[in-house]
Length: 453
Image (cartoon, rainbow, N blue to C red; front, side, top):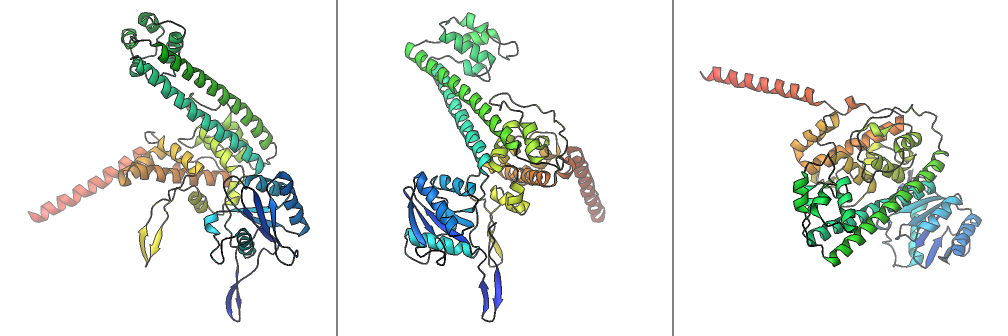
């Protein structure tokens, strides 16, 4: 395990200590890899390799021959990924560094100088590693992100369906809530089958639809242009294709999670107590994520308000089972999630506290969870509304996401169940406190009135 920077006192003052003597630095590019090891390990200690698979294996062999144990490398595009995974499999401790944080300011910009600078910083423990899950979790993450992309593409095809209907002046999306529901899909597929009679189509309206059959029939009086019908058919076919791809992704994800959970030892796991929570069926993952997430983390985070099966899948794919061991404190985890202000202090004054403009997948999931509790009658919902009254809607989302992140970290680290009493006061208690404050304010006003008279 790579060590962090350490200062030592000498007769001439403080100096940095070499904490990672068996370290190397690698500068990444598309067609070549520049690798630098300490000068006492090899006469030619700064070598250039290609980027083919045989070159990557040659890098590993050379590093083993030089008795290297830990490696620092730049995160350049996706070019680092193959070498990173191979080095991890070969047993090296690999640190992935943000290029902005290890920029070489001492010499001219060359690959040799960058690799040597990386190696030097890593020797003194000055490289801040980026969070990276293990290789098995990375496979789950890749498929999960691909699944999200497919859902977005299916959403685009839904918009094209609505556009095609509007171009034919078929106002179906105006009278029903969702054209992807039972009523909408039945009518659209009947239209594509050749049925253009509004009365006949309106009979397919589901009994739970709020709009009457007469209103639906009026909305289905269109022009039925041949070119627009062709576009509508293409959009429906694309939507069905993406839905099939999403189901295949679910099957692949479940097979990977089963293999992953078989490698995890959760001796301190609590017994699974399922949460009866109403979840949306649209784009819901066809996996028992409540069970699998409990097997991975040893606690049921589905009990947290706002948490859904899709959110749990994304968190498992992005974090893995041991993320609490990679973040020393909850504060560091929340900062990595980008849900805490980046305070800038100069001259003893706070000059800025904006949240950095960068996208973190975990932070985005937590924000979505936070936004769903805004109307819930729970302690988390009361907390959201209290923050909204104080600072506004967007700030309330960030504050609630921060609280959810802290709860998840504590539940996973200490294998605890969700305790709503630690979130804050419920709505009833808050109202009681507000009544007491109002009574005291009225009493003060009454005292002042008596003194004035």
